[in-house]
Image (tube, rainbow, N blue to C red; front, top):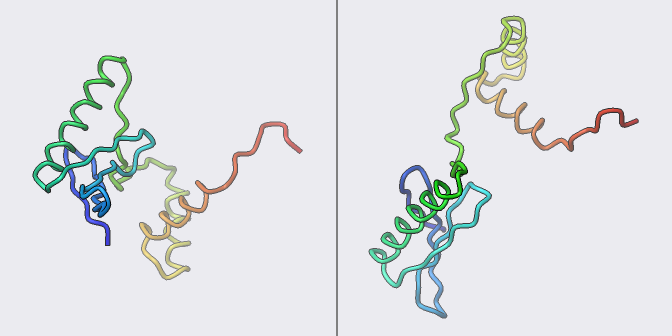
Length: 119
């Protein structure tokens, strides 16, 4: 079981390293690598907060947006015909529209990109 801790919308994994006797953390669900450690939960939490604050400050200094984890909430504006078709497809599959859309988006996002003009 992996424990976790959250701060400012970021979640870090907490794994105990028995050899070094520290709790090792890594921010999850973003591509940037943010890792830290602490010898106690209090030190781990302090290191986690400092790592996030440093990350946010570095992003500001570089003039780039800090990567944020996805919330899991998605608002879409689609054509009414597409909405109706999706509702019918969800009903045919015996699932809610949310579950159906999650499956469709998951499947579509795992497809390799096709190149324009590729045959």
